[in-house]
Length: 530
Image (cartoon, rainbow, N blue to C red; front, top):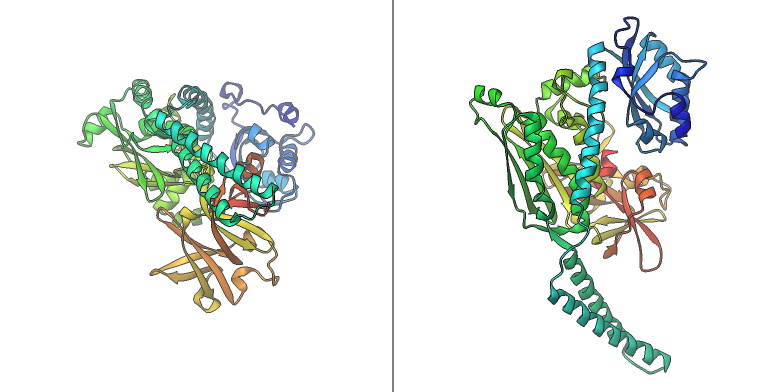
């Protein structure tokens, strides 16, 4: 597959190789959505590319892709992808050419001016350098070893000793057909396993300062590159968290801090004109929020301007004129995490910049960890990005539910209530179903429909007279998931399966149940966002 892309000249994007001075050429943002049940995504992308730039039928050049070309060829994307396209053809002809392919849900082709196109290509090259810097920083900060207190090792050895004695007693009794209280013996072993589990989990916890301590030096370097006076304040560095979480969140923090310096904090001249302190302030905070780790990156800079975001989104073809009329602050926060989005002008691009790409990477990383990214901002005052993450990734408490013949595990930290609803309690507003609970209208989603599972009575869950609903809440987001049956609350061992989580949206891993069956672990918020 890679050879085919290289044959089309798509491996690298270099602005110096693109003739932006040719007045006969126009520039288009092409947004393509595939149908939900597309069979072979990569093959479909190849067919579309062939229609656009194949040697026998070329009508232009693809000069940028989001996600990247290699991510497309490896299937690392959802159902939507974008091309920046250079062509002398009309938008109608381009759309007709793409529509020759099957399994396409929608195509948007919007023309943009030459300078905007040039800016996007130049920014891509800047972002490639940012990615290289991030990878180098990750290598330097990866936690390859942890310190363990001697008393923890003593506890571990003591429990293992007790465990060996009890299992030996049980083994001997069963081999000699002795009559013993098996149930009591098994309970003793289970208790010892729980103590062992808790001790090991405690040993995996490390202070967030393991990575936070590296950031002041990085920030000094970034400030010098941007010629800005920026002070970094760190709080909550003693907070303990699973080492695996900390390793994974490292990259996201690098992006957020870069963005705060480049996009958030104004120049000294701008700040003085706004009657602010000459130097900017960035606060990095770790804290516990309920059963979650919350990491805040706050700057006292210019904030996110929804009007500027809306104008850029229109310019880049990410929203329509109709959508722009009802554009809200929440829409602005969602748009800035769209792949390839940036409000920067070409003359603003620096070695540090890349907000759109950065936020997109952060959101993907946080959701992959079973967390959620919240954004709050006020124009002229600053922005806060909050990552809400689970404290541990190894063993979690979960609610086991059934839909048809499938069993799913929902992390208990996300579960607030379970309800047995009558269909009369469910409201339908423009095709969206709600239930009024806790003084609010809570949207409902049907797991049988989301995963296309046949229920016991062949009806989708939200169409039945009685509905079981799991109320999910994380941060300020709340919704209900309809399931067929509540089974039990249990502790599960999380197994990460890269191929599964990469291709099945809303699944964060799997676990093996007591009867040997496999249960998929759901990330409810990713399901809903997809």
